Image (cartoon, rainbow, N blue to C red; front, side):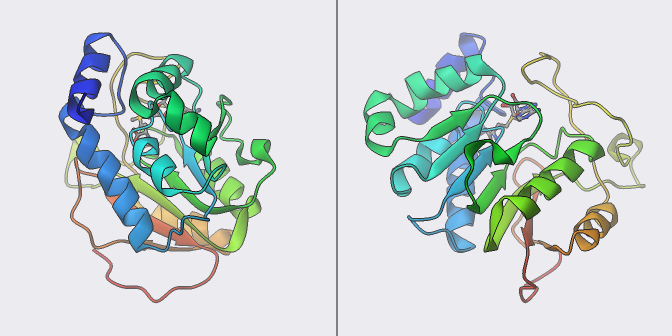
Length: 228
Ligand SMILES: C[S@@+](CC[C@H](N)C(=O)[O-])C[C@H]1O[C@@H](n2cnc3c(N)ncnc32)[C@H](O)[C@@H]1O
């Protein structure tokens, strides 16, 4: 079955596939291609935060060496659907991806230093306190040359609907909610949070997909390509 058909079927069965099913293939492909362009190697250890039903994992597990893909996902139904229908048993056996169901954004559970951390469509739902935990988790559980690729919706004072999020709860579908929703954050706030941890952040110049822009966060200063 084609990937788009799998995503359609999962949605019909009541499984949230991480975004619009018609973007399931392109959003997964984009995560892989952006990670590769930004420096991913087959030997990289990659943490996929909120990996859902493996929209990115479908691609990443194929590329990466065995035991190099790590996923955190507290929605066990989503993850199981991904394992059964998106990844499949043969790849799981061959590549031995590792998973954890904690909902605390605890990156230390695997006892591994990551070369890359991915959070697609996560900061677009997370409150600032969870973003701070993820930044700490990246700083403490990654190699010196690691990068953190995360997407976000920039807050804008021009639109009341895109105001900077000051709430304390996750907004959107998850292991505890079936309600869709999204949040926006000011880039200035993110920059300050990174700076206070000795991290560097740049917004990548790629056009947004589904309104989300990529941020690349590193421990070492990298030449800024283009700030959109
Ligand atoms: C919009 S989906 C994106 C999924 C995946 N990153 C992708 O691109 O398909 C958001 C995901 O975050 C997960 N999530 C919600 N709360 C979480 C938490 N506290 N820790 C980790 N993941 C969480 C949801 O269950 C869901 O799978």
